[in-house]
Length: 117
Length: 149
Image 1 (cartoon, one colour):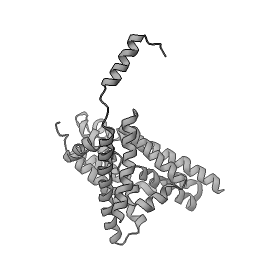
Image 2: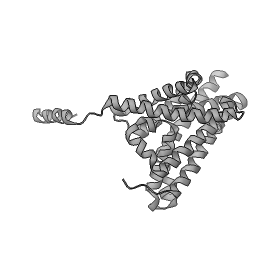
Image 3: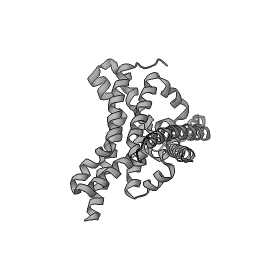
């Protein structure tokens, strides 16, 4: 059941991105930026957590989930430490993803060369 | 804006007609299927971490890290861009696409060196994503803090 819901919710989020790319002049980079921001705002409004409960990985794997991770981290740390939490929360909760992105990204770029097209 | 002559308008309409329309329905279907499948892979990985005794919330971070690794590795092998040609947003929007957006330009610009080539170009897309993500999270955190007082 998890897998079906992950497929449907994750697929639908990607469809929104596809429609934006095909019907507007937004580039993939714009769509990614938009989705992170959108995920953060929806998370702040308390609307993203229900989606995560329904779609599980289908909601956390798309980049909207990254925005959600940042915001849940900030809110958690604000509850724990107050004002300082605004600055520590985001990177605390997203630490694994960002570190993985930098380290694996660098490693793969050094190890591999672009394939000729 | 400048007023166009009738010929110019006609020409623009002509160009509009001739411009190939993206096959929207097919693109949407591909994005749905590939995006959905990538999330299913994510769910498999997440369930694996949960089966090792993590709570669903704890499993989120290692799942993201694993997916980032897979996205970066498949980009290095040249497989991810092949998927991306057909899948569009289906391969861009998941976090594996974020990893792809880091490795792709970094590899491409390697000849410009390991500082200004690889390390700088890694963040062509990832940089803006992190900037806007963090700034919106800080703004939302600030609002939350004020409302809580």
